[in-house]
Length: 399
Image 1: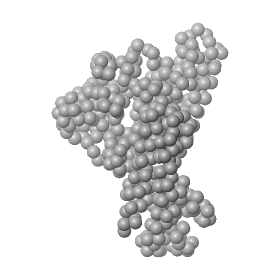
Image 2: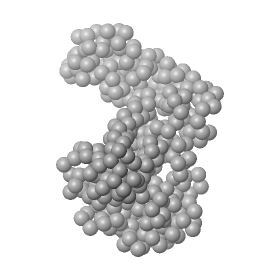
Image 3: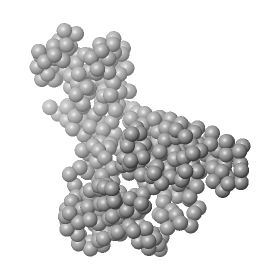
Image 4: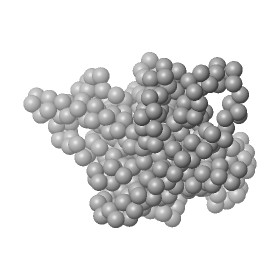
């Protein structure tokens, strides 16, 4: 990998990419990241990627966009990348991409159905949305593949499009999904926000900042370039991070193929309580009133507390309809019924959720489908969820 990194840096220089005081480095068990090569002060620009080097809708070849009218930017970038994966011009950048085997092991979209069925509720819901997006994009590409094959006219572009396979497209699509940056260009400004994406070399090697408020670096776009600037001083050898966003581990697992251990992601991690609270509420006849009030589902638990929506829903189980409405209207003190609500949280939600998490951990331990790394990632996620549940229950029971 050191030789590949040296080639990447040499190629980046020819593209006008400026790197100062940092370099990509192979990190044990975590792929490639960016580390400081010397002492750095705050407000120092460590990376500058010229706009011309970005892969965006604007510089996607016309031969691709013309064959895919109405396709998402994600699909267009994936097709463009797919057709260039064997290009010598992309060789230095391609060498630091995760392999197909890495992608298959890390990302749930590639896992066998037996493992996907064991995903936590929030992760499964996000995977369903991701899978739908991929299959929409593939439907567009598949139609273009068929059209290119039927109307083959000897053009190199037509031949390349006609040769695209679903597996090739999936690999490129997931590379785009895990390595793109949110950015609206003139070509995408009026498109949906999902189309506001670009790819860029070297910058895509920064790993995710593991906590808010930490010493992460800041990325910013202007008309000329994308720059990464330090916010704090760093010693030689420090890994330099950027933030992908305030995401919990279910999101990170599905979208990026990793989770962060506690306490690194404590401020953002959460788990869904819907599988346990929604059936109890529906059985008690509270679904309609909660839907009418805008409080049905989306019940979450983080490291500190159950969300406000959860408390509103639990009061429906503990109070009379008039009392519940009075709390919602601000006419009854929320703290007046705290003990009853917290007892319901433990009995109706936390204990059943703990039992479910324990069962899922056993299921993963007994599973043989998929890669060992996939099963370990899934097990780690359920252990994190168990820690959230047990920690909350123990705090409530100790009061």
